[in-house]
Image (cartoon, rainbow, N blue to C red):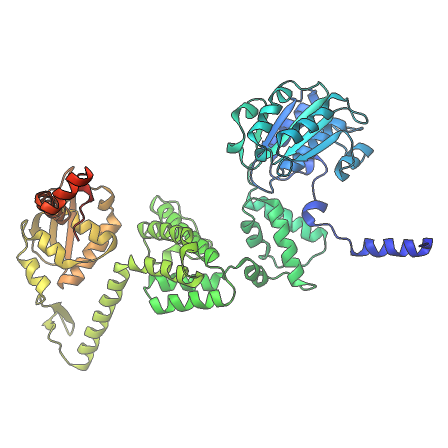
Length: 558
């Protein structure tokens, strides 16, 4: 079949029009000076090339998309450049262009993931005995070197240690721990760092402006954060956003939708619902977020970020170094740094176990409910507010509740005193060191409040106004946190119907706490059960028949 020149030219032009190169490839740096975020490595390599003391083997390690393969090719360019510029390659000579296109004979790239056997490595290394044909040096680039088999690694040790003087090895890997130490010790190792989010953001801004792509000012920040230090990931996400946006300007809402994130307003509403113990609202927000395409994993990441921000801001403020939060203002959230620390850990554990949940919604909502389970003070806060509101209504309407009595005050003012009529209130009035464990058990509670009370031992109690004072000793400095003690004061005061304040003293050993008493009772129960089991004729028959024994630690008491 004969094709005319004009037809062939038309076909080639059409192919040129539809051809497209990914941003990560088309924007790959062609000089050391263009590399982003690896200044230390670039400086070391540039000096080595300029001074002519380049090592015969380099090992580049780091995460994905941080520049390992790019730097390997730049080393090859710098060694074979026809017009080097102060240790850097020119990027315009024939050698540089051919290396960039992958057609330079003296630069050989090997993908260890697909050529990992010892036979393939030996065949490959046979080419090293021939000197470079076009360039100055022969450069061997082995990508993902950790994928080589152990026999392949062993077969290359001698050549790697003493290669011909015209050969330079550049090995690249994302998993340094899988590379044998015998190989690592023969190379100069450079650990490439994840690129900072700010540099990724600035780079994306420059790329979008160069490509004349319109974007909102705040649309690129989530892309830079979602890349986790990988410039290639940032460019891949950008291409996805560009494809979805079309000719329109790239909007923040589009980025959120693609990344599975929720907006700052929705996130703030969710955090507010959580700290207010509004279960229905928190579950509704999470359900709506997932139905709109958000990801449970990214929502938990965002929640963890908020609680980290709250914890950091409150701690900095406590030491006199205030700092504003990015998503919510920490001062407006009634959450202590202890709470925020705990909620952060719950979010991480919820994300870790997300794949075990029946579905994403269940995993997300159970994590939120787990956070709410550690909010006793929020529930008590609401109860206190409702009591105050109810009392205020009674005063205005002239009605009186059996739980409240009016007392005269100066002028026309009225105050409310709470009668100690509840069972817990009566028990508190008869409190001593012997009845303390029983009182703690009746109080109940959950989370750190319950742990505080169950590990404490009463020393003395002083009944006075405006509040009684309980002196207790405790064996954990962690539980003596001032914020936690304040929660305990609030919880117990609400339970017994009168103000009470706890003072703590640290002791190495607390013997009469509820926890120690229950532990002793459980130990006694296990001893009794062990004695009964050991005397059992049936059990002894089994022991003799199968040459066994009774393991005391295996006995469980419900």
